[in-house]
Image 1 (cartoon, one colour):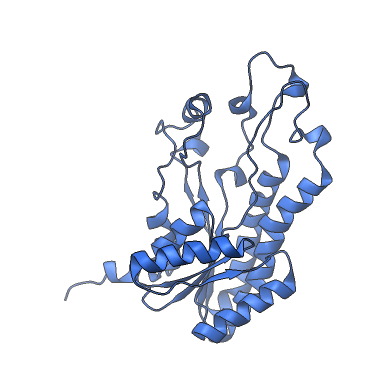
Image 2: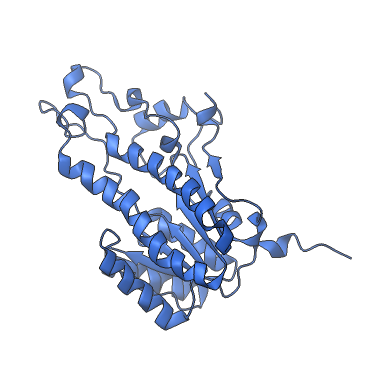
Length: 278
């Protein structure tokens, strides 16, 4: 009798809601779902972007992919999106909490960067936490309840290596600038990702009796034509000596949302080229 190891990775017919679905990583998560026979639903504040990405995926895969406009920081908007998914598909099997704000770290010479902690605008702090953490809470509440009533489901939170370690601000430094003018990675991104890991562990234990597994993926940086100086500084911190290639996290996402990880909950899958080992 042969085993069915590869079959454990199939998710045929399962409906997977992906927040931040119009974004760079959101589309890749959707591709992983489609590759294994699932049906991704792209949720994004940018409704037009979600619809456009959904059309592109539909054409490539020959399967209808919905794109839904939703503000995940608003409970009413999340509830409306949940109703749309249920009206269309009648089920929710997977939730990927992927949405996050990640402003580029830039420095305007002669002006203190907004990202420095001393002058960080409160609005930036609140926005990062509302999208990256409150949004995950509201979506887990709405879609998780549907899965709990069905007695099964998976929630995957997309955290970060910066949910485990602090940003190394040296990779953002610019020669010749005084300390108070040096650009830095802002605090709320890391705080939101650390909080997402806490939410993962809480929900894993809370919903285990209802058949829901909850895990987090902690990816490192993905190469997207960043400045060569930045890439060199970052790769010097990574034992494998490079950033992740686009699409390199898709197999991990599929593992975490499929039955291949059926005995895994409350765990973190760290894929960062070894960066957090140092």
